[in-house]
Length: 116
Image 1 (cartoon, helix red, strand yellow):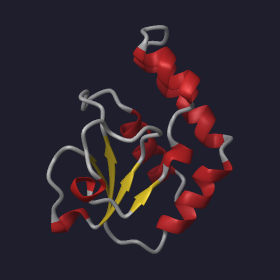
Image 2 (spheres, rainbow, N blue to C red):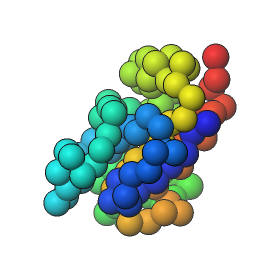
Image 3 (cartoon, rainbow, N blue to C red):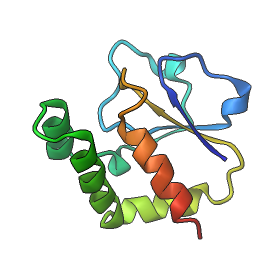
Image 4 (cartoon, one colour):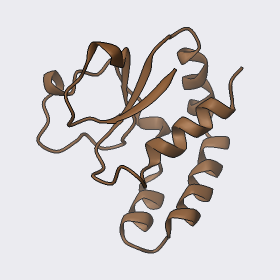
């Protein structure tokens, strides 16, 4: 089961394997407070894509489409998917304040649709 959660929210035992899926480390957060099992920055959106979305150059739909293409062409995404295969509970954690429009939602969908 894959869940998503803001990295700033307290960790819980039900989170299981916590993976930070941001390319940049969350501001003001210590490694202890983040309580992550892995930092998978290689599967986060590219800097150019992230900047275009946050800068307003891409709307949500265009960002989703572009990030899905990046994931499809990113060998690290396939490796990540294989590594997670043996994990029972997985929580993808992210720093964005927007809980409805963030890359962790897209990544979760990608991972669930690409089960091996």
